[in-house]
Length: 416
Image: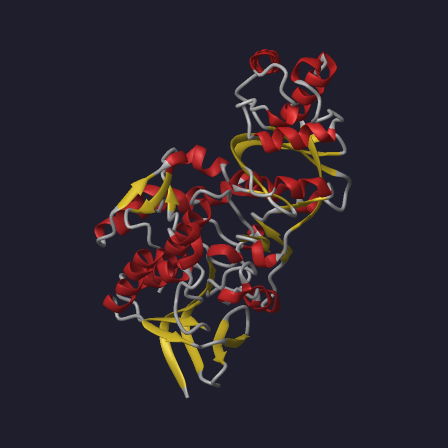
């Protein structure tokens, strides 16, 4: 038996739900298909359960720049449904939001469940048919057009337009297995190489384990390949037993995967970018004098956690039992260099289970940026993480989902 709809949306993540709501509010008969038993499973994990639902960067050019060279693809989507429209959408639906550091937007309740509840209420309000535990096994195409969808229960779904919003491969436990890439590829789309992105970094240096748990704000992070800098930014850094994590590190990880096969990738950290080397030397001299006759390991330089200072000192050969007055100028300079240019070698990136998003996906060349329509299948639209585009942490990837979801839903409904 089959069911006929105006629009069938495959995937009930943020992009899929927004697409379905947008299409339904134009009076279209919409079905939302999700293989999980509930929608928005991955959405509940965002922002450590607080849901950083967007970033209040209202300047369009600045917003697009956060997505790198490919970001211009999103220019139209953001101009139609950008951060201001996203905040208005949720505020008008009853969700009170707040703007925190770095323009990150959260619900005042700090609960991702409240964001999802708004979307579910809209789905019900617009009488969208939400079919959960409905896995798409196959999509049947003919003459560059989708004829029908076959589900795991052998039910067939037909629609005038279809929206593929199946997400990526990150957090596979939430249902993001990458199935959508296979479906798109079968329909003739090019899938650019997939790799985990926005993910912690594993370093070759084993001594980093001793720094586990130390977190530093506003560290300058440079990524270098064969001594050539490819990325630089300031962000928070967390030392872990395997290497490096924290928002700043996770953001630069998206630039690393493609270079690991090309040469040696180095992470160079300036732990105190707000203090130049000369000022740092003066501070260290002052503290060494103030704590005269103490063993180096027992002093407190105040500029950084002393455990970190001691481990760096050991790495450059300073005897921790040495009295402060006996620390030489050469040792001070070596310590300063270690603080301002701490060099670590990238061994690998963490796997899919720790990745926030997927790098790669359906080629942008095969999607119309004004409508999100496929250039290969005439009644197919894309939105969300399945598209070959990622942004940094801070609400940018959810903004991409809302914007492309809205545009796909609007376009798919308008063309009927």
